[in-house]
Image 1 (cartoon, rainbow, N blue to C red):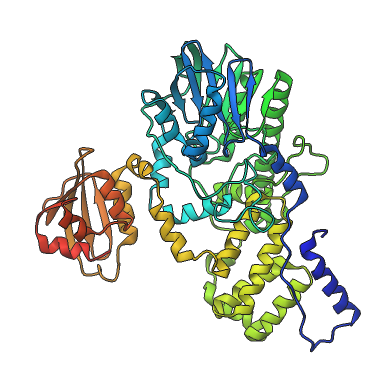
Image 2: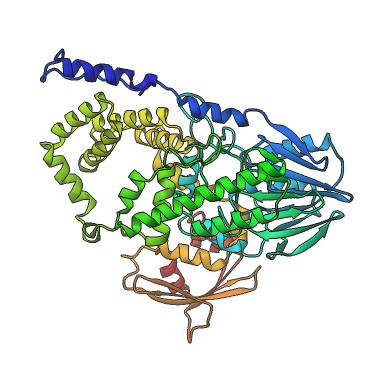
Length: 580
């Protein structure tokens, strides 16, 4: 290891081996000094300055303004936009920069897929062009329903951690996202609900241009590319980008709409257009037919190699842990210039592909009937002669630069003794040591965020609550009402509801939707069909249901304010309202 943050560890290890420290003398340890991997810093320089890149005179790319590229295609009658960035403020800067080039109106905005860094700035485009249509691929709803579901607080925490949104900027915090510039938690996130959808292969004529919508699932299953034959240009979203990162066949934050082999098929289809210009959702513009061919071939080979290598190992009965630890490109395998772990690590992607095909079972039968996490932690700590002996072992691991083992062992100690300050401190230091040396911006951000949570600098309970409260109102309005009813089920106080037998109807008045709901002895069941009898009927608007489902408003208070109405058995409604 060559980084400053581990030099002290090497020195301690040498001193111990040389006998200059006695076995009884406590090891003097210091926290790591803030630092960053030089390869990662070099990679992040690609996104250092926002700029407008113009290709073929009519295509303007707002690069480096926000995490994703915002692309403006100029036709005789106006501008067609692909993707809006993460925040309205950054999108507004990109629009202002485009206005120095052309004053043509924005007539259509397309979402390449539903990730927040591609749709979150949509409000700025709505403000600029209130009459413009917003387009998405026809299955866009599935991802929005997932985003707005009961997993939202945890999913948001993972996304916030991955991007380093809560970290300070610089050597002690985030140096970027791996796929774009440094991002901060501030700013306005929005979501303009698509006003129109497109199907695979559909030809459109907008702004005086004729172009084709191509379904290219990759990052998500609603992936959309646009082919402009007049310019021989294809806009690919995140299906393929010149970002110098591994093809993201899987992600540790988990997304149901990602399929590894489907990703490769999208790359194959993109290659079939033999474009002269390729512009992805992140990274550089690829200009020139040979350069486009080279990128597509490289990413197809790399992605298929990962899938096939995972399959080879599955056929050899290797476990998911083995696949994650051992899969690597051979030395002779060329995967394109300067590809690296800058975004997701190859080991994460390999594990994710395994899980896509084989599920959560690792392949080791012992994991089907494991001891509980608490018992495992207790026995491992006991094997190191208790908490004190375990802490000494953690100190030794940290001092020897074995930071991964120090993190793991300290986790067991914290599980047994949550208030052990030394174990918590050493885990935080070890997380930082790994992060400062990592080539992966995502790993760095995940680990440093967790270290701050461990230190109390980011209170986890507050963060989880804030994640739910910060949920995008427009996302909520776009999700199906039944999603929020399922969230109620996840928030139900099961013990309090174990004797409850309640049946009622929910009418979403601004959507003309109705659902039947039963609380059947601790379980909340929903149905689009009428029940034979109900105790009461709740009438409310869609947004109010979203807020109530997440606990952002109170049933009784909203009833008193007139935000909801209840017809029927008021005592039964009061029983229901008390269950959350």
